[in-house]
Length: 446
Ligand code: GLC
Figure 1 (cartoon, protein in one colour):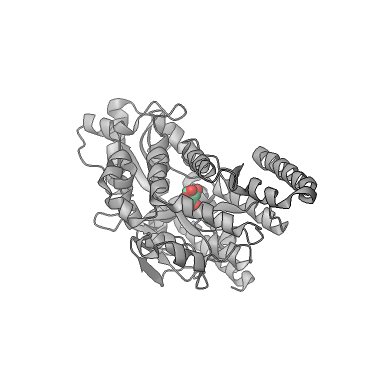
Figure 2 (figure 1 turned 60 degrees about the vertical axis):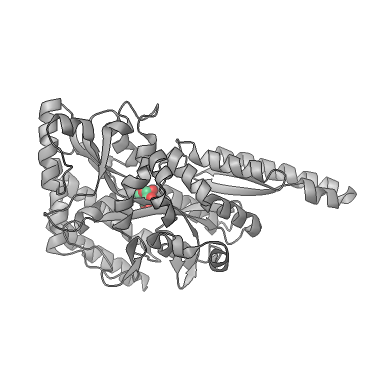
């Protein structure tokens, strides 16, 4: 939060200057004082987001200056941080990166600017990834602009599989376990698979992939909205997690721990923990988001390089079942209380421009939200993540849009962790989760 504090100082300084000078020459002040925009987002080691901000500031020198408030890294903590800003009625943060799952809850509280008219006026909505655009929707209005998209992907050590004579990446969890076992034995790799089993939103996305890959559901099955590149469930809060299929998917996740394919510590892992193990060369497979490709081989996440790594679809429980990636991603949203809506929109337009999306993909492994960029051969070469991530984005399934999402999803995270540790049988876990979720829905009267 240091940058937030320093920004407040900056703003204070700027206001003092304005107050003194206003008496003498207000017209000059209007030209020389840039509008200060405060942007909140989590740290990004790739440097892509700093480049974005620097580029914007250079281009808008003397008019708008964006400063970056570093928000917490994990989405849950970032959510709480934004929530406390809103509850305090603060206008300190003007524009922020918003996880795709936040829209309904924040919009429902009246905390976001309605961006519908600006989006339809200034952005080619027909060429935005459908699922990403859908994630900005709440009660027929658009409350954020799709910045970059995410989909769960299976990363594998192409070099190690090849050495072990395995030519194709696995398509089922059992194939994955067999391939992992072979490589662990022949190459001495410590672990087969790492993923996000921690009790937070990342665990929810992983749990859902196990459930979906077995043909199960968690909540809101019926109403699916198809977009250019995927689909999304529109009506929330219909709880259907208690099924044989959901239990079978989760039981498979537990089996992977029990049989030593996944390390026991995976129950505390987030994205960066998994990446650290995989990048150190200690895992054959990793489930993660595209950004991992942008950091592999960096000073902090090496020595494994992107050249040693392949990307495949999330495995399924049985052969022939469709593979589902959980849709993630981040939108740009504007604080309802901002006094700088026009400047905030300038920043959003800048950030969503195809040129910037190209740069974000190339430097940071962030997947574009503009469909045509997936066809761009030069970009596919400069940023392999675009070609590798396309299939995952096309088959990504969203988490439910719910105004009580942050109350529901922690139950799924807790359930997943308890199954992974072996504390609860999968069938018992889904039964309890269904009851808990239904109680929350009933108590919330939504
Ligand atoms: C990624 C996704 C986001 C998801 C989070 C979970 O940041 O983009 O949608 O909620 O991971 O950890």
